[in-house]
Amino acid sequence: QEQLVESGGDVVQPGRSLRLSCAVSGFTFSSYAMHWVRQAPGKGLEWVAAISKDGGRKSHTDSVKGRFTISRDNSENALYLQMNSLRPEDTAVYYCARDHSVVDITYYFASWGQGTLVTVSS
Amino acid sequence: DIQLTQSPSSVSASVGDRVTITCRASQDIRSWLAWYQQKPGKAPKLLMYVASSLQSGVPSRFSGSGSGTDFTLTISSLQPEDFATYYCQRANSFPYTFGQGTKLEIK
Image 1 (cartoon, one colour):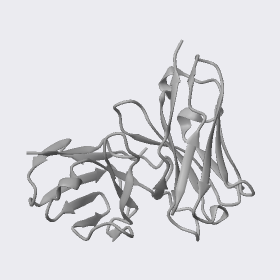
Image 2 (cartoon, rainbow over the protein chains, first blue to last red):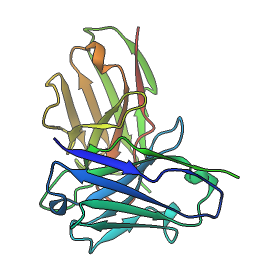
Image 3 (cartoon, one colour):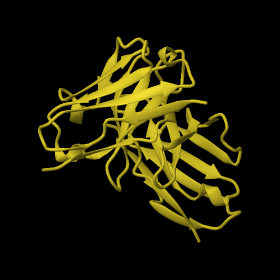
């Protein structure tokens, strides 16, 4: 059974940094691209970042570009999101998600973790 | 950026009803569309991808159709567990946006 477990969410002040982690089990992590998707309280879903299965290709949505960095460690079955210069508008539940295909990245999110809450407030 | 607009924003229906939710893209996205179901306090769940392909394990009462700019998600006979919020999402190009959501409530 696939499991994706996020951790690292916290309450932080604006301008500070945070690193989210996603521990994966139940599937071959190195065979899939991975994503981070977030959801502000009471709002809709927003794709944040993606990384190819070997980590060689990364993409970030414009609102986090230059501040957030997605990475992965295939030997540890772990996905990360380094979040710097945090802003109040980054407050959200952050989900890690597995891509749908083993062939190439599709940007369909087939399997999700339970999410971790990041609150940016002074 | 290409925008996705869902309608209605909310809908009330009864168990056994047939319900259709629409997603309209501001530009042609061919068939690069997914549908997700989200229940309160839970992660979203993939229902459909490439507009009309049913994700493994999803009941066959769910179906998707459309291409280009107009798409629909249909639930043929509502079950109690189907009351949730539904999102469409485009996968054709950066930045892979979602629709605003449609809340399906019990009448």
